[in-house]
Amino acid sequence: MKELPIHIQLNPESDKCLYEQIYEFVRNEIRVGNLLQNEKLPSSRYLAEYLQVSRTTVDMAYGQLVSEGYLEARPQKGYFVCAIEELYDIQTKTDDAGVQKQNVDNRQSYHYDFSPNKIDMSLFPYATWKKITKNILVDAKSSMFALGEPQGDLELRTTICRYLHASRGVNCKPEQIIIGAGNDYLLLLLEKILGRHVPVAMETPSYKRAYQIFKSFAYPVSLLPMDENGMQIEALKASKAQVAYVMPAHQYPTGVVMPIGRRLELLKWASEEENRYLIEDDYDSEFRYRGKPIPSLQASDKYGKVVYIGTFSKAIAPAIRVSYMVLPEKLLEKYRQNCGFYSSTVSRIDQTILNEFIRDGYFERYLNKMRKHYRMKHELMLNELRVLEKDFVISGADAGLHMLLIDKKGRSEQELRELAAKAGVKVYPMQDAKLETEIPSIAKTPAMKEVSESTNEKTNATIILGYASLSQEQIIEGVRLLKEVWTIK
Image (tube, rainbow, N blue to C red; front, top):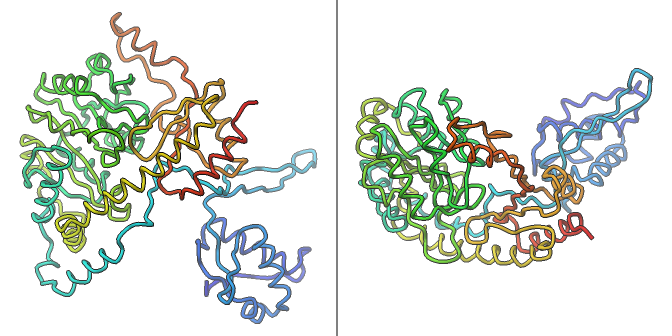
């Protein structure tokens, strides 16, 4: 925050007091994101000397910012910007009649955020990661700083191949694996492999980012209904899709686990035509709390029709940004022809660190620890949510890092979100994960009429509650607040 004083321009002629001008400037800098969380501001003494005002003036401005939650005063250290995710921005304007009115921005600060996308990093083995990094850099040879293989280093691909076979039943060879910086990059590669304007089918609700990426390719996307077993096969057959994007192990956000019967139906559909494929996004598969792990769809593929995509973002850390894609043999040839000249997007140093982390057993130990840790939170969350059973159906109790609450009282998702926001709790409506407000009719045949009509039926409001990043105390208090505002007496 050394640059802050340079930009403050006080106006002695203004109707506003000097401390108000300082207060408003700092507040606005925080709101627009120029001042970030944990940034330190100049001391009141330094700022007073620079602006040629009394220290009391600066103390009054800082005190007001502290009382409103913009700043935090740390003893013997100074003033720091607080963690403010979103804010209500209330501005006063005058209408044509000269009457003042307020515009309320749709931003707000929250005490508890039940995000389904965040994870808990409190148990991450930072010391181990640092040790591996240090050893690799100390022993690094010039070859490590060379460009490397386009698909990723062979050592890491071999390690991932062994891990996938042991944990997910994936049958592949290291040469079938492509390593990339996130699923987005792998989907971009897949567009070059599959070709242009390929019709794609997706479930709805589903992973919206994948939908946006497919649309950016100018892929025609058919949004298909789901039942308790996942994507409806009749709807898929009625569509003109050549590729189906599915999450069999733990569908996001519904939590549906696709049974073997539906999986075999999907594989049969893909095998009926040469250019049909299934994209298996193995989302959240590491975290299952009851029964045995669910094998991947790729493990049952006898025809070479499944493109398997996974990531270490949930299991290790989002910042790792390492994902992997397993291509069937036929598509591997197309990759070499159309994409073999693309360089790998993951640093070779990062690949080497990750390889040792997995190969030497650190990843397995960390994953086992996180499963136990998340299971405790999962059970706590279930126990706390029981107080809402009169008003909601609780779903998604077997796996993953989030749960669903389905309203029984006919309220809208927007109403539930606004009630929670007033209590300082951020929740996530299912509507945010829906790819369209309504699925269009996907077939004109009488056989599909019932499917199309059932798809457009109004469903009960559903709220997504993630719990991974919250402490046990935050889960208890957050659910207590939800009970206060959501329970109908």
